[in-house]
Length: 204
Ligand code: 5GP
Image (tube, rainbow, N blue to C red):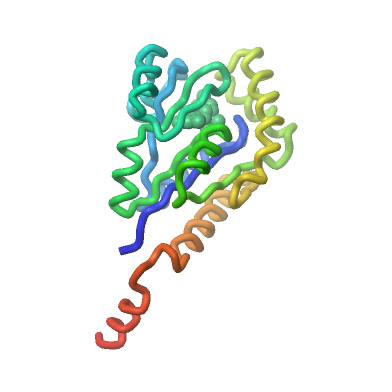
């Protein structure tokens, strides 16, 4: 059986990670989303256990100390972390697990895990990025400034990733990621029994 892998998608706030990930998941039922834990307060419409596991800082740190996160980081003044158990179990089952995490988290994963595909999502321009964050209307002015400052810094890390995708139109960005997944699935290293499979086909 082919093994599952982690698909890490990062990109600055406003690059459209959430929208692109959502569309990707809707179209590809073989991808599972890893729901992160966070100390951020829910935005209107966000649900606990759906968008995030919303935790108090004390509970978050307890879980971090117990080693329950695959990675965690302090992002835009809040903690965010990836639950380890869920991700490792899904990988073992052969699933593709989508992690929508920041650059710091991605670097931790890169250091500690092998079977990972790293995708960096970019906005068409930084002006467009700013417009998107403002239009979303969920952040304070101070938070918008912080997210923009962080966006510039995050761009320095694009070289750490395997692929970049420009999110001009969501549909195109999703297709690009689907192509990446397709190619990754065909990697020889992900299959231990290629010859056997071909031989079996001949017999059929
Ligand atoms: P937001 O508050 O806009 O939902 O997310 C803020 C940032 O935190 C985004 O860059 C998002 O990718 C990142 N993030 C979300 N979940 C995780 C996580 O589990 N780990 C890390 N390191 N970053 C995360």
